[in-house]
Length: 151
Image 1 (cartoon, rainbow, N blue to C red):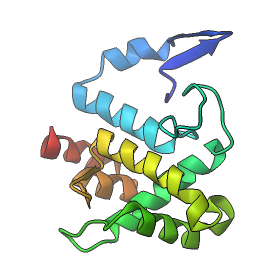
Image 2 (image 1 turned 120 degrees about the horizontal axis):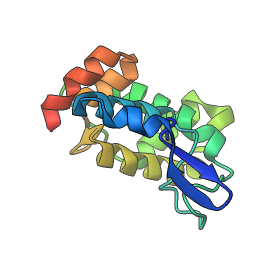
Image 3 (image 1 turned 120 degrees about the vertical axis):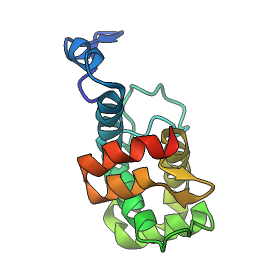
Image 4 (image 1 turned 60 degrees about the vertical axis):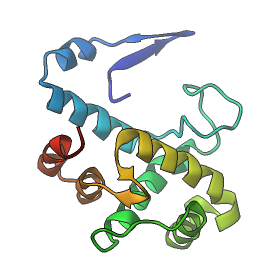
């Protein structure tokens, strides 16, 4: 993830870049991890019966849908949240039809991405956080500024 791990054969180990990451301040480490996760071309929480580090059929679409989902959530008025995953899936199918397919096909992917968003602090109580706004804006300074808001 973002250059911190490497895969050699059937083993996963820290990369040489991991030592550089360890020397950073916590907020910089967090920014590195979130940036890598946000662009990651995989959906490790999509429960399709494969290990997280093994590629799957949805991996190509996951990064684009993850970014599009942040943009959709960031476009909501302040204090507003998503009513449910089905509505978000419909919106993503509309915005990215060649990537998402139809709304029914994209629901499991959006459920997995939504769970990632919750774990990473991008949403809370179905509402986008400052971190979501920073990711959607692609603003590294705002990303660092989002850290104290929810830590």
